[in-house]
Each structure stands twice: as structure tokens, then as C-alpha cells.
Image 1 (cartoon, rainbow, N blue to C red):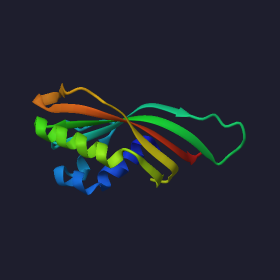
Image 2 (tube, one colour):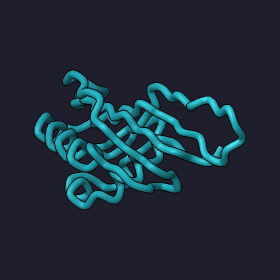
Image 3 (cartoon, rainbow, N blue to C red):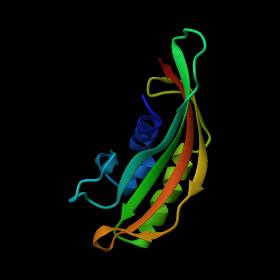
Image 4 (cartoon, rainbow, N blue to C red):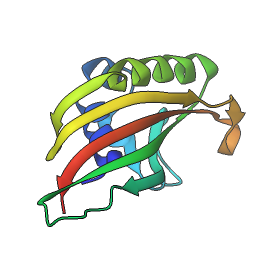
Length: 133
């Protein structure tokens, strides 16, 4: 598992966000060219694993995850960023097959123009979790 998968699972299950967009429009890695807007792209920025000195079944990882919104208009872009922040910030618990997950906000990016005159913005998160070694 990874921070990208954890955040993706949270976003796809968040009902207020599904009212704004189809959960199938929440992708990891790359958005297809013909994706319906609004859409969300989740990517890993950095991943640091704690080095194990003993043979243990779990490894603590800290991953910076970037969630990019692509929308047809500025209003939908801002609404999606607000819902993404509300869904993921200050989350703790066991999620997506990982243990002791904690998610903190790690910065909101600038408003930028996306492909085909779309509107884009990113929200980063710091995702810490224990997963099988």
C-alpha cells in the first residue's frame, strides 16, 4: 500500500465529493486525455521509509502526496479543493490495509491553467503509515 492509495480510497468514499464528481474520475498516476471534468489526479511526491534495524513485520513510511484538481471552471476547482481538504486532513486510524495512518495538510498549490482551458490546483498531504515490510 501507499499514501496515494490511502488518499485515493478516502476520496472515492467521501460522499460530498461524489456529489461534485464521479468517483471513477479520481485517478492515480495520470489522467486520461478524455477524462470528464472535474477530475482528480493523485501522485506521490516523495516517500521515506524508516530503516529497520531489526527484523520487524511493519515499516513506517512517510509520503508526501499531491492531489491535483482539474475542473472546467474556477468554482468547481475551488469546491473540489475544499472538499479534498475536509476529507483528508487530520485523519488517523487503520485504513486501506495500513496501520496507524495519520494525514496532515502540507500546502495548497497555486491556481494554474490546465490543458484545454481547464482550471487546476493541487493540495498536498503528509501521509504517515505502517505497512507490511
